[in-house]
Length: 443
Ligand SMILES: *[C@@H]1O[C@H](CO)[C@@H](O)[C@H](O)[C@H]1NC(C)=O
Image 1 (tube, helix red, strand yellow):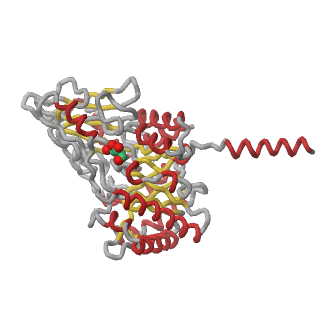
Image 2: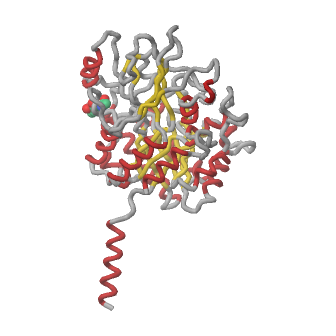
Image 3: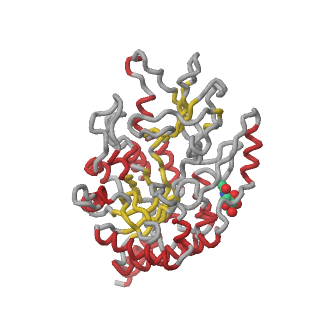
């Protein structure tokens, strides 16, 4: 009997100290995709993504995060950004999503706020943190909204001020110079301390209110790209209040931020002569150095490509960083300059039958060191047209990032977002190849 007790005690200790930490696969769904229309020849006519298209993904996810809700200026209430789509009886996406999620017993549905989708009066994200009254309005309305539509919690994808992009001058040899300059970062926010403390207070107050609904209501924080965590996130004060912190460790370089220079968007480690803080490992390290339990850190993997035009001044080897001439042209699906979804990138890597009138396919360059990522490019033709450089994530690189997460025993990986993964299986016949590869490599 004594032996048995000791044995079960051991077992219990074993489980308590050694939980399976690397288990989260946090799937973001940006509802913008619902209104995306089809244009061009690659896609079947019904190119828009509907909530039902999520179904093949959900068995791989631990969380489904619906993006995005916003903040109503003046009242500071947490509100749907698109009432017609989100809560009106015709579409009722909030309810559709939570119902869909709850078909899977272990899948949690979270409502995410911000996510760079809430651009009407962007300064409200700062102002809210400065006022206890505004925070109360936000917390009360948010908890009510989540509860009303069956969400299991709230994700704060807070729209903090961003790190300034580095400046690039057009003269040769300027890269090293601008790199050095990037270290003397001028502050973009003269109320940094107030915002940091306000965010800690917001997390504490929201946690308390969610707990009052149900003790297992979830609270997470998403660090958007180019938000400086060491400025805004007081890790020791909030880490025990959240279920996880998802770091969107991508888009360090984008054609919008750096139109004249193309570079890796989401390197895992620092490429030579770059700012050592702008990569996945540096972002994760900040949290671990501030005593975050590894199991609470989730690494965000994007499902997009960032594109730049190359011109006759671009270095012909294609090796980044290289001179570029602004964002590449919009894809038929994303319809945003400088941005391609994964299936759009995939379509550019092959040119079936070398069709006349179509540009040659892009040459893919993988990274044998597995530290920086994959890119693909095509030099301009004789008339100077058609040059393109793409930095992107694919199933292979997403798998490598999952492997990084597993090696460091972090909490998991997030896919940002499902609508830009190949949800129709156009690349190789398999739906959601990036999500699948990440999930597979976590195990
Ligand atoms: C983030 O903030 C810290 C602390 O102010 C600063 O040392 C660091 O350079 C900033 N990071 C970037 C990439 O600007």
